[in-house]
Image (cartoon, rainbow, N blue to C red; front, top):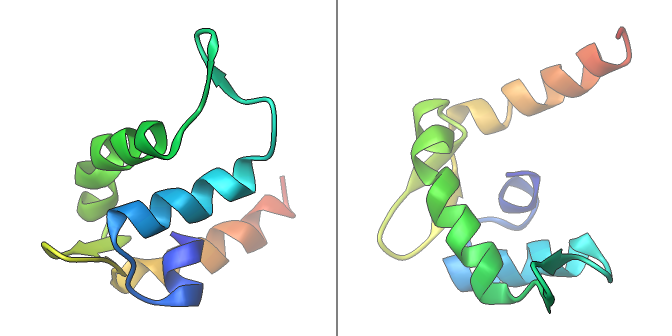
Length: 83
């Protein structure tokens, strides 16, 4: 979600491409390297949970940051320092 907050609305393909580039080398699914399609599948799988947490405001065309993406994520980051 941080990518969507920083870059603005993204299509699923564009978001998957960005996330895949952040994963780095060596990530595999069984014996095959992870692909953009694998990341897209995981994004679709996570969509209901992200929407329910108000982190995501989906539309047919793009992933857009929900209201909590700008407040919940920075707060969680600050709390991580206390743990």
